[in-house]
Image (cartoon, helix red, strand yellow):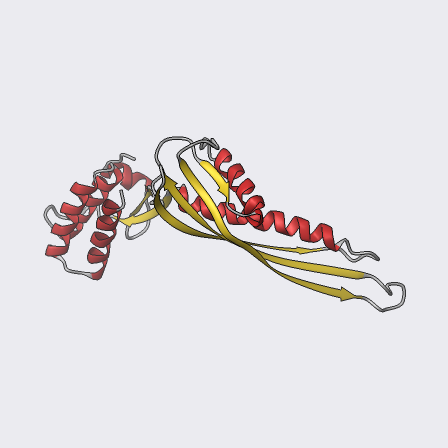
Length: 230
């Protein structure tokens, strides 16, 4: 993202102008640029593995069962809570409603050519409440809740493997005098917006030296953390 101070003055309002920057996501593990195999180590993991394959495909990541890059699901399981309510009033006697709450969990081992890169823990929750009726389809409600909990678990793992970028707000000072901490911070934000974290860190360090405030210290720590996780 590239911007100039005149642009900021046009698009930002309020006493203290801010700018929004898109911050690249930091995945929990860096996968190589090649297809990925998804393996269920136990039968209890198969539904979750299928859901993860669907998530990978929706993110346009290639899936190949023979790939040396593997995500192996193991220690999979679910916890289930079923609540049954019954009406006994006039005209509604015998009507029942079932609520099924399911939590799915699994450990994912990520490896390339047999070398383990990371172990990730995924979890998904789902709650299904059936309508009031004479015969509550408990098995159907459990089946739907399990499928959606597995999808939630797969989505949780995807957020760790291939997270989306986030938007952050940065405070800037377009009218600050040259050489002041505020002017240096504004230049650091500009460098960050252009993707030059090294320059942004240098300017943020100069801003912190000129004004050792908690805000300037926190901004510098965040920039250094992002550079370290690139």
